[in-house]
Image (cartoon, rainbow, N blue to C red; front, side, top):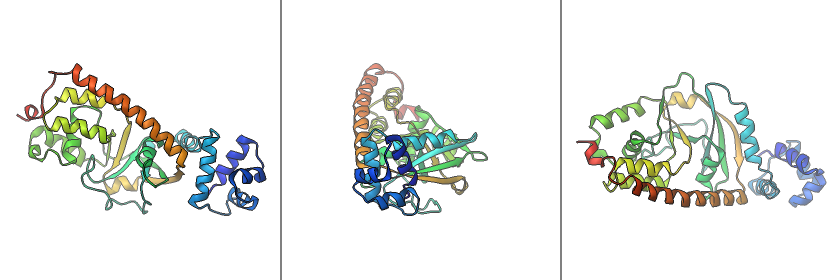
Length: 282
């Protein structure tokens, strides 16, 4: 990847010459010079050196770029992020998507770099892709943390096929299938566990909803059609260094512990309130 911007930012913020930065990174002056002039792309090993060095110095390169991109965000468009465990083939297509995702086949993106980074923080991958999505002329289905969203996740994950012909669920399915883009809360493994309890009839919809609301992971944006893919433009590739990954994982563990406590409290607070799943479909 090209490192010309990164080298220029580091040298400016740390008041380093190219020779001094080369010494800090344990590379030659010529290498730093070629990077900054954009004449040479760095291998992952050297990208790791640059990004890890910046992170240890308190310079959050990826967060700086994220702010730059969002400052340029135009009305009717979104800057989005996708953490990939492998290299994304371009042009984008839907052939590589699994069917049993939150909203079926689609290209899934998040609204923040940290969301996307958390997805790959435990993997060998270092790639977070940045995209620009033009929303105008696209059909958008929006969800929030509520019963409708819970049932949508449960259906598209393949957990409640027995209710597929019920009017409540048919309306939700149609809402998704008639859309180009779905905007909805992100559901992680902890959320899946809570929704599974609801699907098994162990907790009510009210208990489930409030337990899920305790885990705020932000929103996911799903491109479900070719028309939606055509509205996506690749902007940049961000590199996640090992220390940045470790910091993201530590933050996620802290949030997970807090959400567990809130989820347990929600089960107690809303016990006896709401309806069980079989009661919804009577």
